[in-house]
Length: 347
Ligand code: CO
Ligand code: CO
Image (cartoon, rainbow, N blue to C red; front, side, top):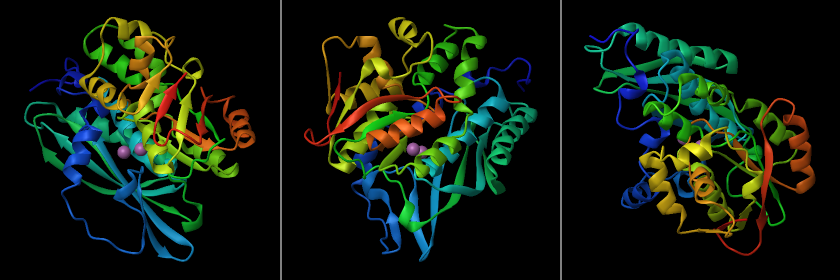
């Protein structure tokens, strides 16, 4: 039995966090062969790779549902629980919805790892749920060699106010509400490249709810939004570009990146999830010559619990930026173009 004092939770699994997600290309190939039931009440389904599904109940009310769980990316079980819960709730916020209830999804090696660790993970999730005004109705726990935790979340949304990733329009600007590169930092920590204290800023951001960003985008007429997680900034922006049938320009120098990330990329602290993203993103992304290799990797970083990427008219994006900037490390990072259907150019 490993005790809570000596165990390093993030080393209990082969892949960390959202890097443990099956890659976009693999997933697309698998899903292509499956026939899922269809229903006219499905307002957002599988077809657009959006953040959450939406199902209409009545004229003025729809359900928004999502599920997310993964392996530990940090050593502190309470922090892991908080990050996993914040990340699970994020997909509801990304659609403009209000999360209401959640179910815990847990896997744990109860015979080899002290049960107090599991309790701390669940306490972390409960703390985030409480802060979000979400009730945890129950859950399901299985024995597994590697710990895993997350939530299935149900929220509400007005059917006329759904913010998908398909609504971006040429001329829109793009706001990003958190820095990128948390996946590089947690990978470096797992491989002992940085001390625990270098993760503090990133843990602060990964446990920050996207609730305020959601409020701001609804108040200022967002056309499209998604949250940045396992497929990285370029992957999620690429999904928006394809779903909206537009091109996207990203201004590399404007993208907020956590401290030390570029130097750690040069030292090769890159997860297999990010490596996979890089290959996939090359198919639809072009880079200006001045964009360094390290920045290209950071833009593909497989993250957990990243910020929202929001498209709206330039003056609305400026208004959102002004509202969020005092409390969020946010930035206006690019714009939507007419040509370049589904492609991204990084300038
Ligand atoms: Co998402
Ligand atoms: Co998700």
